[in-house]
Image (tube, rainbow, N blue to C red; front, top):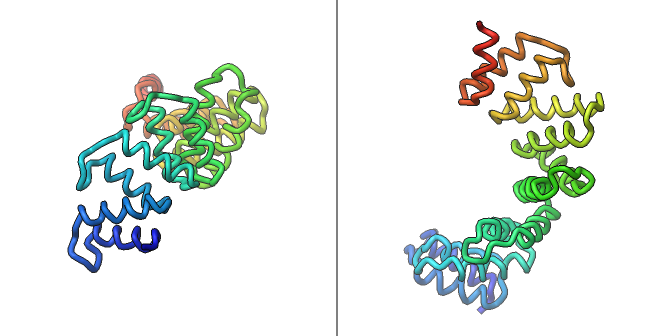
Length: 232
């Protein structure tokens, strides 16, 4: 049979779309399509093994099929495989391999992979911004796509790698604002600090109190402390 057709049929059996739901039959067709190198079928079969959907849970086999899909260029498989390497789940923990697969997915524009690659790269070289080239690039791209964590992380990179540069302070405050608007607690706290000290924005104690309060209400301990002092 044709692998694409097998995967499509498997998906219908798995979801019960137009046919009686039959997970066992779905898995059989997913396997046939995966054996025919259909990468989405390999991903779907991996997910069945990972979750134990209609088949005995087996994270090692999940890794095998995620790797097949990832090596065939499927970004969502590359992202998941990287996370499994990071956690050492179904495979020996290997941050280098996690970075490899995050980079592959990041190069395809996946914002979660871009942020994960960047975070891990920076954690590997915390005191050497010269090693952050790809990380900074990916954070900027993911931030522009609206990825909340990337917006916060990119702001932190701007502050750390270009300390004291006025333009970087302005950009950092802008990204803290965009992340705070999405409810990112650390960004909200940092934005309060920016307004308190006039870093990258015009000093505005009312705005500082506003953002300290938002962060405090979300459970941020330092914001709660700062807000208590401001009200004292």
